[in-house]
Length: 126
Length: 249
Image (cartoon, rainbow over all chains, first blue to last red; front, side, top):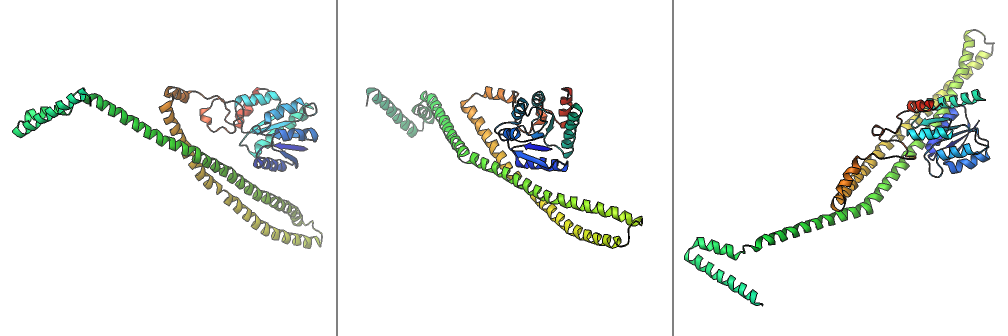
């Protein structure tokens, strides 16, 4: 399981990577916004994307839309971890096809719960 | 000198002589009337009005000059200073977060190692209790227990040191708090000066209306800092989950 963690703050990337490692996901890579993340996703064999929303360059919501529009990436599970909490934004992310949405600040328990739920659904749907 | 001025001067001179005579003869009542005449009667009202206007203009010019200085200072000094301060907050909080995570990342493998060694030893220890150890295995187990105790001793010292580093890294809260407090004071100062500017040159009605208007928020805005004033925002992960499940998630 190879995971890409996208956030403009290195601190947050490090927190997420540590939590993912605790959950047994040791194969992770980092990007600091959508513009860096998208080519990595297109070139690499990532199985999962964790992304922030508010970033300079390409924002997380646009990264999500680009991923869904790319025939090779459209089924990639995407978990959004963001401080953005407006109702309209969450609806927008849902309509764009996000698989999970976590608002910051969050707990290790919430991350585990959402990731478990995403994989349950994927296995159930497969 | 014009004829008119000459006649005015003559009249004043005449009044002055009259006043002198009245004073010398002790006619105080008429002397007072003459003083009032001399000091000018009907010109006064308009003169005082003019002086009043000038004083007010001067006062306004002085206070707007002072404000010009203040606004110049704000633009030249306070705002660059505030930017430095906020950059300091970003740097300091990032440093603290990095230091804390360095320490935590040193602690985690130590804790994992202690746990793993302890559970292995525990299972062999249970075999000892159940008298399942072969001769010679006991000696080997005793050696491992001794090694384990030594490593716990060293690891606990390392954990203690790392936790103290985590503790000390929290000092950023005090430092950044002080720095941010100054920025808040500065922002307040700018606000007051802007309001004075609006009062002098702008439209207070528009300002008052803008104060009560609801601000619209679009796009990404980062963490919500005024949750209690917002009705377009979800307050918790539970609310987010509820909204998503209502959308079929």
